[in-house]
Structures are given as structure tokens and as C-alpha cells.
Length: 173
Image 1 (cartoon, rainbow, N blue to C red):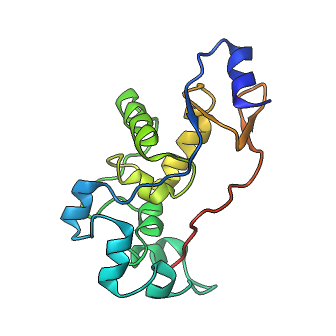
Image 2 (tube, one colour):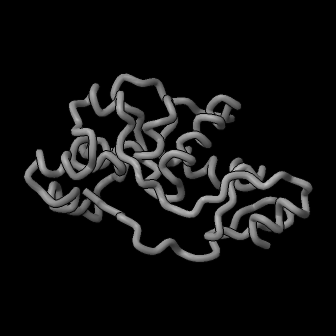
Image 3 (tube, one colour):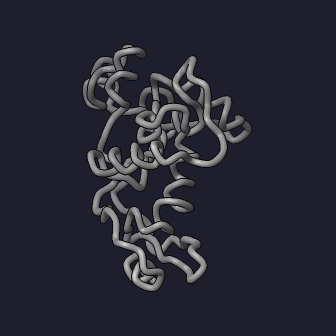
């Protein structure tokens, strides 16, 4: 069933309707701390490239994704933040607190959600992109806090990808 149908069947109030993918960049304070340009375009221009693929190239087949992504902080921040917090920040594991959920929703309202989870996570202290992706599917959608037409919901609240997103900017470094 759709997210709206699921909410209705569970008596949940419909939340934020996600109609756009994440359109942000690295969180502003983090940009300043890491000496990033304030926008993606300016960042790649500073590096003299058109985007992260040109900056580094692809990961080799035998490379460990976590270790490879560690090298991508400046060349592909989305890949870096998907698996790592900003340097010096302690990662959070375990259940999401209500203030983190509220920050997640505020970020989704401002910038969109549903892809580029690494960049998205730079707005949630201590959380990595993988954790934000999981929270989206296991907390936000089942609670009805977010509605996304790219997902279907089972009666038990599990999410199923309904259709792939199109026009996403998926980069590897």
C-alpha cells in the first residue's frame, strides 16, 4: 500500500510529503570547518573539475568501501559522510532520539530527502548517511512522519522500494 494508505490504516497523521531528492550540500558549519566551498559548484570549480568522478575516478573492485570512502572527504563528501562522521566527531549508534528525528525532519523540509544520504547526514551530528537512510525507512516512513511515493508499505510497517528515483546524482570517487 502507499504511504498515505498505510497512515490511514494505522490512524496516523500524514507527515511531510517528499517530492524532491536532497538538494543541499554539506552543512554550513561543517563546510567552514573543513574549508569546503559553500556550494557543490564552487567546490568543484576550486578543485578544477566538473564533479567527484573527474576528481578521483572509480573505486577498484578489490577496495574496501569504508577505507576507500575515508580518502574521499574532499573529493566526494557524499561518499565520505555515508560511512563516516566529520573528522573528530564521535559517531552515534543505536536508537534515534526525538531531537534527532526533529532535526532529520527539519533537514528534509529545507533540502529534500531520499538520496545523497552522506550529504544529508552532515546536518545530523554523530549520524552517518547509512544511519539516515535506515532511519528514513524504519522510522520516518512507518511513523507517517514522511510520505514518499518511491516506497510502498506492508501492513507490518516494512518499506518496499516501489520505483527507482530518476535523475539522481550518484557519484563515486
